[in-house]
Length: 446
Ligand code: SAJ
Image (cartoon, rainbow, N blue to C red; front, side, top):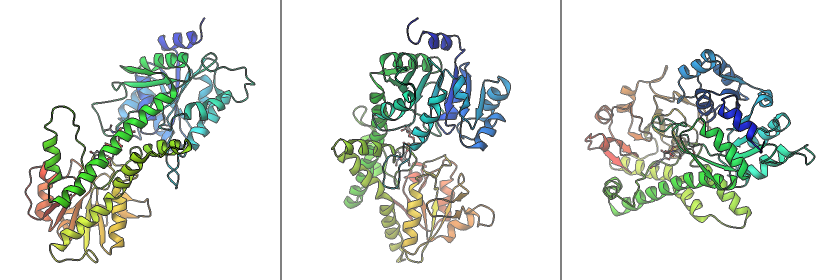
């Protein structure tokens, strides 16, 4: 028997038990994917409501239908959840999908990874595989997880022989249905070659294509390149918007025309800023790591400066639009349409709309908002209810009552013709109105 033979055999026979730590927008779809592939899956989450929902056959993640959770948890009996880590003791594979936010000073907060590794270590079975999926800086798997898994073994355990450890970045795009965990290629990098091989065997049993790389550090860097690529290109699009404004050009026309180039160009679009818990956050994990090595990741920092300045740029556009009607921003009523961080999701975390609301209020504007997917905002120092909810005016009343309507998140449910017809003045940060083929004299674009 060579190292990994036992776990590989259990994977091939679908006898392996998979434990997913963290049942959020990454962990729950991952748990469902492995249960769908025939594995028994135990989820672990500190949130008792999430655990109860899974065990009752309900999904708390918009992209995961409750039907799938019910089919697997109640029907097939291959999916269960608990708040404790005891399930690790019976698991052949433990997949860590915990948050990796930023602290107040934009430094990595790896406390969730460390806490999970510390809970896993004393329960880890011999020959088991541990995979970190949380986006983090290169070196995390080896420097944060490995030492904790070796702790207390008095040098008896050897990674790649007695247990296996790898990093495999999540590639979940919330709200997307065409690319799922099962059909999106999965990058895998082990702490040793044997670890890469065992992790590839597990993921290959549930995911159509695996893409092994030479190490866990390489896999960690792959994810950071993917998300830094997006943040930097979005920043370029945002700066193009600012430059086009100075030049009196329509940035959307320029990008659309550049997109006719069949090679060597990939369109990104300007907007009110960068939202979500990935793109604005992940590149800072690389900035921090490089700083510890005495290198300044200037490109990432510049992109962050430009993206972070976009809410203020929108305030200038609103001021310009109101000025065209000789109205000051101070005292104006402004209605923000869409506060989620991107269209057709309910998540408002890190949404630039929250910054924009604060900035408009600082200038004396009276701000309200509408978002069909976010009935209330209680974060970032805001406590607001969407128009159209109980006790608030209906959208049809709020539109004409506003001195200026600002389109921040262009949910597909919006009727742009209706909005233009009933609004006195519109600032469109997403080019949503033109893209819908709607004409509007009083529409200002980024
Ligand atoms: N945005 C722009 N202009 C663009 C594209 C996006 O302003 O041209 C903004 C969006 O409005 C949003 C933010 O950037 O506020 C992030 O958008 P996103 O499309 O990157 O969406 P996320 O953060 O939900 O998902 C991304 C994934 N997106 C895509 O691959 C398209 C992917 O990068 C990761 O799998 C995921 O983050 C993650 O979890 O890392």
